[in-house]
Length: 312
Image 1 (cartoon, helix red, strand yellow):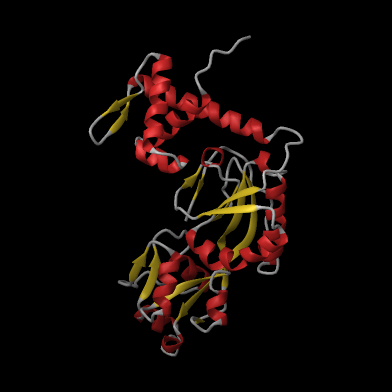
Image 2 (cartoon, rainbow, N blue to C red):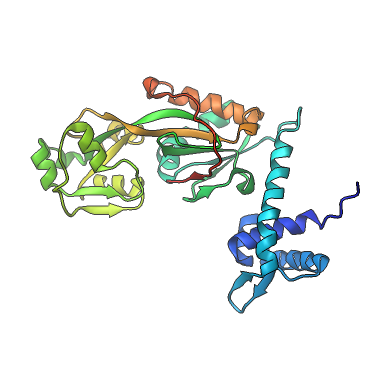
């Protein structure tokens, strides 16, 4: 059978433009120029004999034909990417793309990444900390680390370490937080994106914080912890993320000890990526780094149903 196919490169450019509805954003995604995206899409339109986009002065929208074609192109590219990863005996690429939440990347991964580079100097690592859902093949991501409860469906998911929660504050403020009533009167620092926050810790500690009002809210754990360091209030410390703050006496725990909660950090990947040499090396390394942190927090591989990984 002779397949009558358009240029594969033009389909890739169309997929990116259709996903972003922007030639500029698609160009940034693929690290090429907007002009290259525009010309590639035009090539595909000429080959098909139909327009795929309605081009406005500052807008881009799919035509009816484009809206029908886009999900089929995405499925085809996904299938090609997965098939490529499963070719037996495929040689190592020497590249590894890791997606991590910003705070975990900054506070845990970055200080230790040198040790991975020393152990595997031939592997070029790319770290992505954007807070978005990850489509592994489409985004070129090999492995992801996410905080959650284990419902990472459709992916191979291994719990690396369970989160342990404890209130933390600057040393100068610690003397004023000696009881639950002191905590209720304090300025609490909240993280809007976190699945487990003050209500979760209160439930574990047997402390009712439902009547607590006010406080300051942040969209990242990093911002809340830095606000605590600055003496603005009391944050919910999350081990292992605050270990270095404790060691440097930037933050101190109050009303401890740390309590194990339902969430943890999980290593996620598509199942066909498991045997890639670069992925296997990273799995072994991060397992050895985190093994001592929470030996009892490990769980079995999560069950599989298709779903993307969302960053937090």
